[in-house]
Length: 103
Length: 311
Image 1 (cartoon, rainbow over the protein chains, first blue to last red):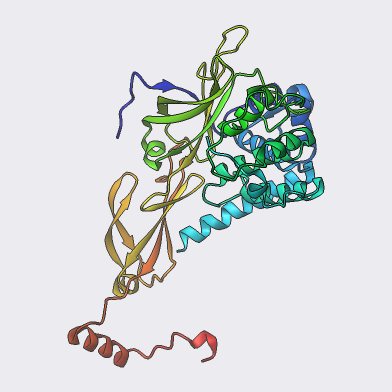
Image 2 (image 1 turned 30 degrees about the vertical axis):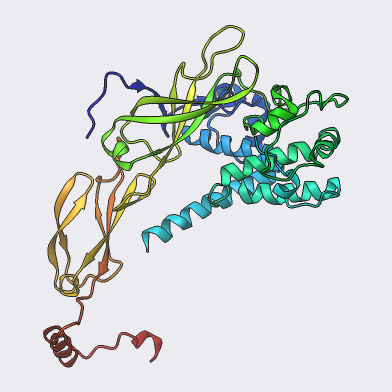
């Protein structure tokens, strides 16, 4: 396949080994840190670390947090609604995958 | 520029109450939200609905729009009269990163959108960009450079919204998964004050693959086999991400039997697995030879496929 290309832009990949701080994540989602804290308190995001200054998130939290921000803002959902929607979306994705695999 | 009938977009009457408009918006927003909807054109419809709501929920904007709209129908050529909006005061507030139509801009100006941030949502450093791209599975399996064309809404020197296209050649990290982000430092928008560029975040989604289904790091393939291959066992040619392999089908396999090729999924320090799911393909019985072979099988084998149904 395509060899490494000298002119191609090199990016940073946020996979499950990526470590994001509270500040990183809030910057990437364009919300206040307090906003992310509320996501954590609602169980929307998983966090490693006890004190807030030690908190860190995996790369997967980035997608989840960004969807949460959009749902909350665009559909004017409260946090419990966001959490429920995210869980149901995940379940829906899983079922769709199974449906495709078993066609 | 075409006149937009915001009442029609939202499916409400021209004399709809604020509550009715809000209700219609909630319903449509849930239906077309790009994170939730599988509707075609969900994103475009969502933006259209958001724009209509932006106008109709604000008494000032709605009044201005109504006054102007008396003589127009949807789709008609539209030119705003000069100073038509004098006497109305607009306080812009809208979905942060949505781009409104030329029609909206002509009516309410880009300033109605600028600073359109609601409480609690801030624009980060105001300069990061986000984009979603479709990626072929091969890019993740093998790594390699891919070219993406991104469309970015931007304000021109007159503060009008324009859409700029740009093409980026990006080295895709081997092993990237659906939903993961790549950060390209310095590829966001330049800050208006200090000229420092922000970052660009690319979220990847896999295009459906002709052969493989993706589940996290694991891949699976539906492999058709003949009834005798499943019953007696066989060695068959099977495509895998790393090329054709000879796959051993164990005797007494059946439809839905799952064979695992460890570590042949999406690469990583702990790579995913490759699953082969068997499908039994029946030879067609469209000539005498085939029909007599089926008849011989029926005569030789007492077999009731509906035994478990009590039939």
